[in-house]
Image (cartoon, rainbow, N blue to C red; front, top):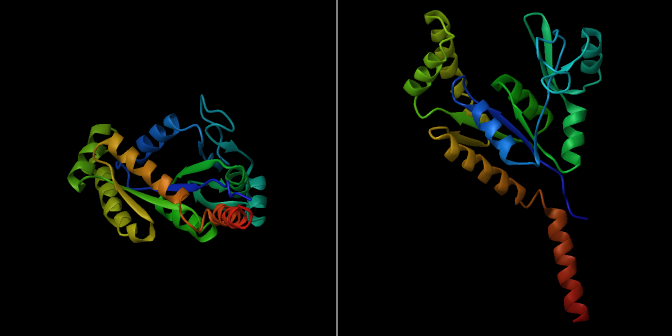
Length: 211
């Protein structure tokens, strides 16, 4: 039997590295790539759609699902819970869909504990000065919050050794191509296609016996 399982692709990086832009470009280019929609206990904001932006659930339901170990990772942020539904991700992967999860570094490390076969990609800026300029251009940061983000970026880069791959986002199209190459390579790994290899080997033996 051929192994047609999809991949879980976990993408992280410091704020301003461009991981969201890369993920959006990948989703637009590939019909077999799907975004993992997180669950949250916070109230929907104007324009948000349940099941598209988030799965909006009650705190009681969230805690129940935590107890049932139905999250690859979860965290509490400002009194609200956020988590990545494990059952939904596994369902999509088992059906052959590649799932991309854009998530912070602490969440990614927790996912790695629960889903070791995932593909973990760290997005880097071309330089720390470029990262600083990208954050400044957003126009949404005070000098104090800018320094906090910049300090956090330095700390986050220390976790890069926990990831399988690193991609420098200098030119977005080039970075997207590199991630596509990683996905293609992962699909060809022997341990992922061992069933296909066995099928091919058995077919070759059959041909040699009856040729």
